[in-house]
Each structure stands twice: as structure tokens, then as C-alpha cells.
Amino acid sequence: MTFGSALRDLFRARDQENRGCLSIVVNFYNNRREARNTLYSLTRGYQRDADSISYEVIALDNGSGQPLTESDVLSFGPEFRYCFMPTQSVSPVEAINAACRAASGDRVMVIIDGAHIVTPGIIRLAQEAFERFASPFIATVPLQLGPTKQNLAVQQGYNQQIEDQLLVASGWKENGYRLFAASASFAARRRSRRCRWSGYAVPPGCVRSRSWP
Image (cartoon, rainbow, N blue to C red; front, top):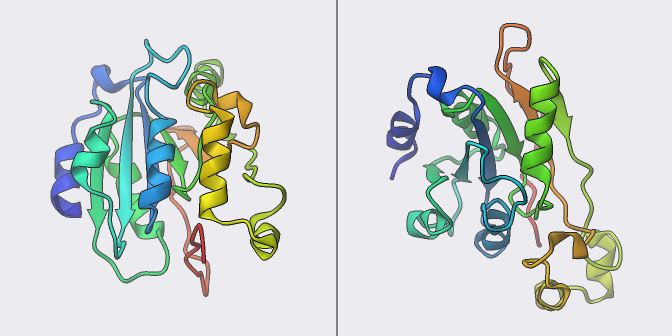
């Protein structure tokens, strides 16, 4: 599925049926390994008290050399959609802004770096904030897996294999709070006349971040 056709499929009238719907845009770049955990952490089976919440997850692949597959994304549930953005840009800004504009919900959350696992209450708590405040801006505190910051841990031998073992041993899929280092970097904002989505700006000399060197 191309990015353009995916956006046409995603774009639909924001009528009463979509009011209160939460659209979660997750940006990926060569994150096939990490994407499995990230997307799992957004499923109804993992999230707590989210059964009655209307939400969609847009898995956005920003020009990866080894992109995600649509079948893998859709396997996580009917809430999941896949978009591939063919681009040579080092910044995900253009793709993220387009996906946010095309999202069906009037409430938008963005995970800028797809190599994050969110905690089991994030969807419920975000929805509560949207219900309590007219135009909230919601952000999480990002933490890192491993003994210390990743750029320091890798110098001490920390790698993907060790991280995989850590994840398995933690049993995070049964209880995401066991990690405590489960983290996400996303922003949420309500679409309304009071607080309109203005998008992200492209910083000069922006360098695309990767989960691992």
C-alpha cells in the first residue's frame, strides 16, 4: 500500500461517530525488531481498561530500507493500519504531519520514535485527560531499558541480544509495569477550535535517530 492510497483510505469525515476517537501515530524507521514490541503494547489485550475506548493505531514507516509489512501490522488487531512513506528525507516531520491530518480521530497521539514500549495504562489515562480538559497537551516521561543510558551501556557490551533477554525475563507482556523502564515519547493534542493541530517543525540539520548503531 502506498502512502498516498493509505491516506485516502484513512481520511474520512470526522462526524459524530469519530468524536472522542483516539488516533495514535507511531513513526518507524528500520525498526522491524522493535516494532513488534511497540505495536503489541498498543493492543487491547495489553492495555488495561481500554475495551470501551475507541482508538486506532497508524503504523507509519518513514522510508525504511527494510520496511514493516502490512500483514504484520494488521495482525495486531482491527485497530491497526499501515502506511509507508517513500522518502529520502532524514526527518519524519512531513510524514507524521500528513498522518495526523489524515487520522480519523479528533484526539491525536504521536510516538515519534517507534522503538518504545508504552505502559498498560497509557491509553486510558490519556483518554481521561482528554475528557477532563478542553485542550490538553499530554506527554510521557521517556526511560531507557538496560543498566544505564544506551549510549553508555553499549560501550559496556549491552546489545540487542542482551536487551531481548531482559525483555523475556521481565515478563512485560503479562504486566508492562514490571519493566518500569517501559517508555514512550509521544505528544497528544485535541483537535478543536481552541487548540488546532499546527504540526511539527523541521529543525535545521535534523539527523534521523536510530535505535541501534
